[in-house]
Amino acid sequence: MTMVCLRPRAEYIFFIIPKTTILNSFIGSAVLLTCLPYRKLYDAAKTSPIYLEIVLAMVYGLRRSEVLGLRWSCVDFEKRLIKVNLSVTRVNGEFYFNEAMKTDGSIRKLELNDTMVKFLQEVRRKQQEIKETVGDFYSTEYEDFICVDYFGELHKPDYISSKFNEIIKENGFPYLTFHGLRHSFITILLEQRFPLKAVKRAAGHEILSTTLDYSDVSEEVSMNMINVTSSFLLEEDGDE
View: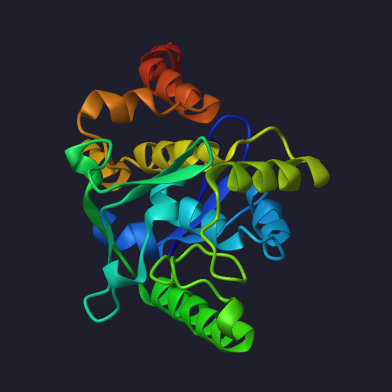
C-alpha cells in the first residue's frame, strides 16, 4: 500500500492507494483518510442527516442531483456495481426526475468494493428497520431511492446544501460547497496521473476539456513542474 498526500487548493487530502491499482478499482477502494478539513468533515458528518450523501459525493464525485437519483434497484451487489442513470432536481416545490442525464457520459456504472458493499448493505438494513418501526407513517413513494429521511421522504436538493453549509460553518472549516467535494474528487484523480479518459468516465463528462476545466493544479504540483524544468540549471552548476 502507498500513502499519498495531495493538496488541492490549500487543503490536505490523504489516500491509501494499492500500488497496482487501476481506476476501476481505485474509485471505490481508495480509502479516504484525511487531514484538515476532510477528516474532520467526515467525522462531523457522521451525525448529520446527510451523512450518506456526503460519503457518496466524497467516494464517487457525484453531483448533488446524481446522489439524489441513486436507487436500490440500480445497485447490483453480486456484480458490485451501482448504476447512475437518474438525476433529481426540484423547481417551484416539485421534484423533477430526469432519466436522460446531463450528458451521455453521465449514464455510467460505478464499482463497489468490499467497503462500499458493506456500507450500502448496512444503509439498506437500517432503512428496512426504520420502515418497520415507523409503519404506516413511512412513505412508500420513494422507497426505491437510497437517500431518504427517517420517514422515507426524498431529501430535497436545497436541504442537502443547507445542511452541508451548516457543518462547514459550525465546525469552522474553510469555505466549501457540497459540489466542492466533486471538484476535489476530479482534481485528486488528475493529480494522481490517472488517464484522462478514465477520469472523464468517472466524472461522467462528455468531453475531455470539461474534465480539465473542472480541475485545479495545486501549488505543490506546480512547484514539482518547475523543479523538473529547472533541473538542468542545477546540473550546470554542478559541472562548474
